[in-house]
Length: 588
Image 1 (tube, rainbow, N blue to C red):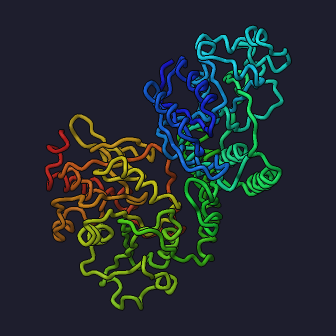
Image 2 (image 1 turned 180 degrees about the vertical axis):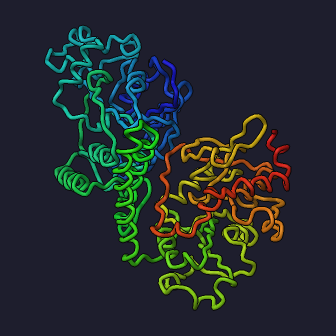
Image 3 (image 1 turned 90 degrees about the vertical axis):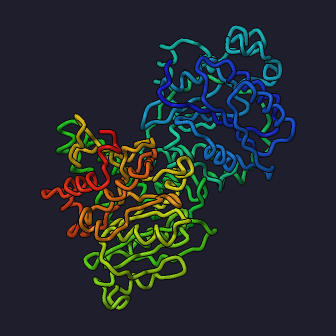
């Protein structure tokens, strides 16, 4: 089977090298080889490490270990999930030997918008102990006849071992078992698993995998039942970590998850302050609605012109709810570890009354920058702070400051001064009419780690050419899932853009030239300079929703002028092409 995407396995383990060895023999024998195997080790001893090192010579293994502090499976699974790189991930345990078609089956049934729910066939202790490497690699360990000869008693559960596609499909269809996320045999898209912020580290043994799946349902995913198709043999063992208290605590957490509809767990891969949880939950709902709306707009006539209307109305309603909550909540800056990130933006009188909402959304980020600087024109605000709303001035602190500059360079102010003054830092530019999801800065910094010399953006367009001519700007395809680094991508400022430290060696910052050539399109001027210096642009393949635009802010917008009836973008791009000889640089 051809793989269209990378596939990985995450195996949890704790001080059971004999069982783990049998499981890894199973992964040596797969019909479809995984691209990575991440072993999530909850504090095992030296014998487990040595075993894993041996298998790492023949399997693509990453060993993620932390100190033994009791049952911390959720925590180590989060570390493994964060360390994984595959597009699609299968989760299993140290006691589950996979049948040779296990990975192939998960790959075959994988589908966007779904996770897969498998099961297991439990073996008694005597057979668990006696199974050898040859039994696994010869496949007789998965034969009901062979297992019966070893002493296994026949029961209805033995039907899981009937290796027959039509029968397995039938049983998957009629089973009364719910298609939940089962930690020993389940799979999903890494993008979805990261979106819900991984496993809830508040949970001990008993249902933490189910709660994980319930948040995937809250995200809008559906599940597929493959308990009779994706087969693994469950080796017997004791569970000394199972307590009545942990079960009761987890039941209460799951109940809250279902009732609240929460998507991201606060205590997951990212640690979200409790005050931020409600904001994140609403923004997650908005992102789901935005993605659904985008899919409808690209669908059939009925979907585009009818269903999309209802979807768009829902999206706007959620956005209004977020803005209302942001407006009434007193959000303060919370200091974090020092970093090299400067967030830079600008505004003008017609929008200055809403900028405090943008700043509040930046205070909610999972990574708080070293500085947030709002650059304003002294010409537009002659009385400086006295011309600003109290709601904005009250937010000024050691992180956020407002600076007034001469020469009204319009939108160019958001990057021009920051690139000069903070050349040793990473600069992130944002817009003044947009409230950003709390992982905006984190996504950009993670992307920057993969593409350290590239300009990194959450939303891009791809420059289009035809017959050695640049096509009009509105023909440049816009996407938030480019998943590549390329000179042909142009970063769009409203999604947030990260510029590496010392990004430009000879940036064209002559004010008179910018005013003459490209005063109203900072994105195009930046792209022209990037092409001149051979700087590429990178965009993640994870979906990034169009950030929430503050209602009423588009009455005064460059978008209407630049990409509307006047279409000034094309004129300004021609100016850039002439000034920088971009046709020659771009190879057309």
